[in-house]
Length: 134
Figure 1: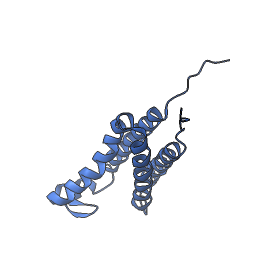
Figure 2 (figure 1 turned 60 degrees about the horizontal axis):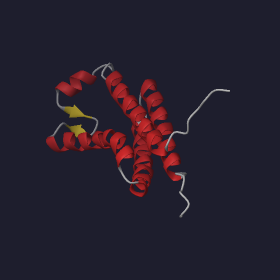
Figure 3 (figure 1 turned 90 degrees about the horizontal axis):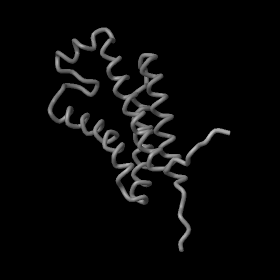
Figure 4 (figure 1 turned 45 degrees about the vertical axis):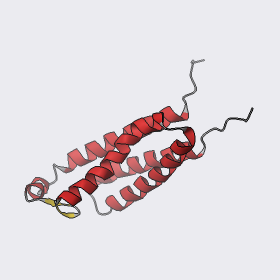
């Protein structure tokens, strides 16, 4: 019989957000190999239109939130942590569902993995064990 430990929900959530971030990074990195992608970047175009300060700030915020959730999942009190993970897990699942529409196969693969991970985040946050009142 192999020895095993019970992993606290906070650690599970943090690890899942880490995995999500690695998939985001690799998916976006591999996307640079698509023909014409670098030329679009050099011309100042993004998937959302021209690369303005507002567009880049919005995209930065969108990517900073999952990065922060790695730490916040460990640091926030349980109730706030639970609800923030549920809301953001659903939000990022929907965002990825929209983002993979008509994408290259590698991006769809990363997107489906990211959706599975963010759904797992929602699931683990939803079933967060409750402590019996003393």
